[in-house]
Length: 120
Length: 426
Image (cartoon, rainbow over the protein chains, first blue to last red):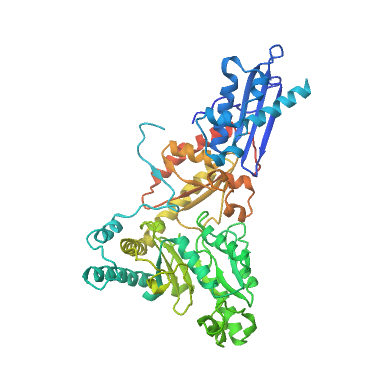
């Protein structure tokens, strides 16, 4: 277990363009992600996450970060297409019961993009 | 995994305790050598029968019971089911009292009975996880058939005042005996002429119900399990929690209690549990109970010291950590703390990597993805249950083991909190 791409503490002023958060304390998984987008190319320049949750939640956040930051960052449009199944496949498969509740990175990312588009 | 670390530190004895060497040795002759069916009339059968009945007598002695009051089952869950359904099957309706933090074997049995039309009261267990006998008193009704309250909770280890609760029930029965009221009983299912209905015609009926059952699976190694002394009618004991074999348990059922079997078949175990007796496991269960009985005081005293040392260090050295359950009225081997802003399953996996085995109340590890009903029952919010860690010590646990856990755990928590977006206020 060596999670990658997480954010330590609070982000610095201007470090990211927006963030998105999903999950709840009651259900046991919360994920918050931050994005920085290159305005020229619409590529993701930086992506960081924080997770409180089970190993699947942490692993899927870490996997999502790797997936979208490959080759200097994916295009936002392309990243929006990543489905929970893609994340599970990237991790080599996940138990069925963990699928819906614990793969939250893609949803948090979509919220972050939504916030980014709205604020532009 | 850390490659060069082979030593494991096992701190999940409440889930399964390693079978003792003496237990294994006692069982050894009954697999191949003395394999006979105890119900057979020839020599092989008699040897097996003798082993089963000697085990039953030895166990009865330890429990302060009579041999015929011991029914062997395949474990704690079956014993709980036999106690509850075995009693309730004689009724068409009625009232049952239990608690919110029972083992699922009791809790889900009661939920099933609700579906079948029975009324169930689930008692609160207070902030410290100890049932108040006064609450039992208030919940008792004329139509109460059964009270089922565990002896020691399997998650937070809190020990319940079984004797006081038994006294409350006894007093309630005395009062109803003095004023016999036949209408308090609903019609038995079997209809007129059955044993049950004859029971109801007896003016001494008020002296019989409600019956008191306790699930004592976690107790035998540490607590008094003499049924005479605490006055329970039914008691569940399990082999694998007491360094005995898996797949064996027993139900103590006081002489005279009419139980209906869960299974139908041969006449074994007084027709209450058909099927060829599990001879080696029965012998092993008796041996495990004997050892538990002999070592109880010394081992409890040793573990209480380790438990309190561990709790002290956890609360002192990991910020935002709270103890779940009563600080002293708990099993000598149970430590349960909620470590906030970190999540149980992740903690377990990191500890496992470091060579430590323990368990959690987090939803992530349960099939239903529901967090621990025990932590919720003591009034803690969901987030506390997700970070609830149970360390249950055992015979092999030393202070050095605890020191090792305290060497690795704070860093694991620091790491998990580092990338945790939550900040729960204590």
